[in-house]
Length: 116
Image 1 (cartoon, rainbow, N blue to C red):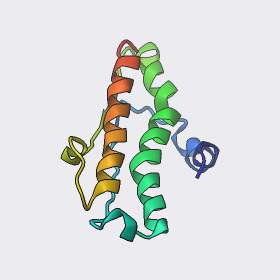
Image 2: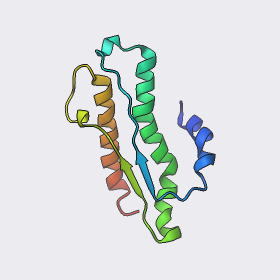
Image 3: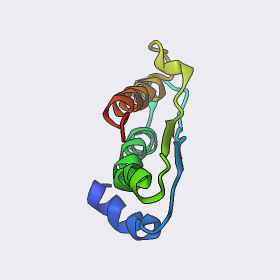
Image 4: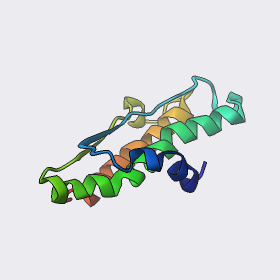
């Protein structure tokens, strides 16, 4: 799925919502060695754990940041991740590495959107 696909499939449904808090809580994993995980499961984990965590905030960023000007109230963007992002974990390497992505994205956006 590309960003354009994602935008086409849900943007129109979210366009007119007044969102004060967006919580990104996506996660799926498979407790198997990396080489034993079927390719489709790898793709689905990346799509769920990483792509959705990036696409939805990207799609909603303007709505969230313009809320202060429109309503005089800030909006919140909250990510949940996993303790498995703290260190590599054999057997759930795909899951824990995808949670590192989510954690780093959340930290970066915290700085980028701090004053908006």
